[in-house]
Image (tube, rainbow, N blue to C red; front, side, top):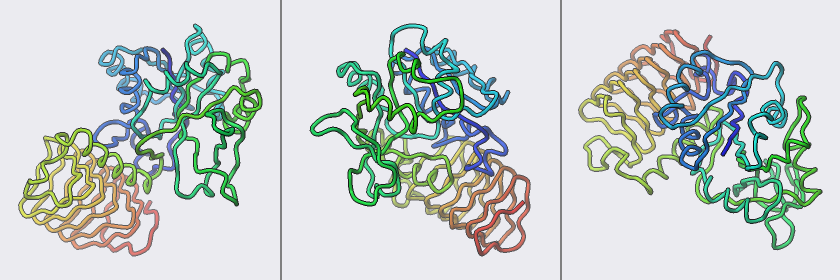
Length: 363
């Protein structure tokens, strides 16, 4: 089987992290984001994976070569000379996606969930039409484009953008499976699969929806990255609780704590709920962490307090410092002792020696 992952451009929504690392390689739950997808695709029998990118970062090429061997897949970069939207990349990768009659998966690189590729393929083959969109249910459909099905059917009738009146609560989850015949509908130009291709397919009665069970999140920006981390850790706690820190450990408070074995944790800490601690992280005594991510090599000194924050690679948080308000630190940031940061987005290699009381970008 084949798959296309829509990676896109420079990951500006996840800055400052993506100033250092291409977005697909930023660690989500201590594993590069894209590796969650590659693992699930390989497990579902996919052997050809195309990454649709606006540019080809060499660091990505070298790291993904390791995954080719590890998961026995072939990874091809499809590089756009101009941004091609969400449908154009399919046309650009036509040679691989259309090389045989088997269906292929397409997914957005920011999506995290329990990828249901086995079930999706069975469902798609059973209805026999051209395409299937994975949908997820949301509490406030008026913020999104809603998918409306025909009565008592999985077939999609129409799409309603940000409905004022309730028409349904299912939205596009950014995961699809298509027959190669979809490629005949798409020209090699900048084009939107959601706004151009899907309405045509629905009008031809060729498009179905598959409802995703369980959690889902687009983690392409810091607030959603942290929310997605909470959902992911809750799911791990249900399915594989042994992967998390023992809730009876002296430092775990509230559960859902993922700690790399190489991290070091001091005395009298209270960590949790919903915390990810990366490789080589050093945490001092009396530290309080909740709803945060500490990336590789970062350090937190004694009695610091961190909540709703992503701490970048090799950054240092001083004694008695306090960070909150969806703060994001790039790599090698130093926060001095007793500093308060509320909603700071701090670019790499900065040293912070005065309080940041309002959300702002520190360049």
